[in-house]
Length: 105
Image 1 (cartoon, rainbow, N blue to C red):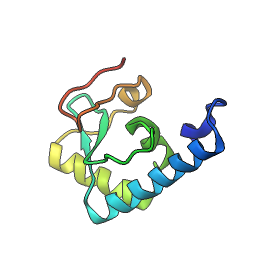
Image 2 (cartoon, rainbow, N blue to C red):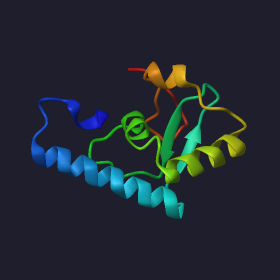
Image 3 (cartoon, helix red, strand yellow):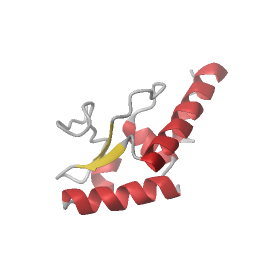
Image 4 (cartoon, rainbow, N blue to C red):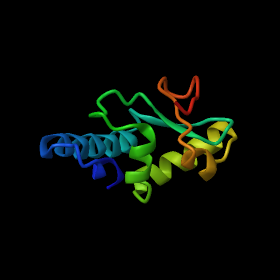
């Protein structure tokens, strides 16, 4: 999993991150967290507060093939009128406020 490859993470931190990703998948399934696709093609999870230190980009990469994320992505692309841009995601473009502003810091 991309989030837990940092060699400085303890086993407890890795466990917390795995739990946060499982909760994200469940929240996407019931709709309490939504995926946002910006005009630039980057993504953010709106409403995801209990992230266990996992960034939106890391979470996207970790659960990219899950049915919950695929449904949320299709819904977000239709709703926003924007398509996901793999280059924007690879460059690290992200949002800390649910998609209102974007940066690569």
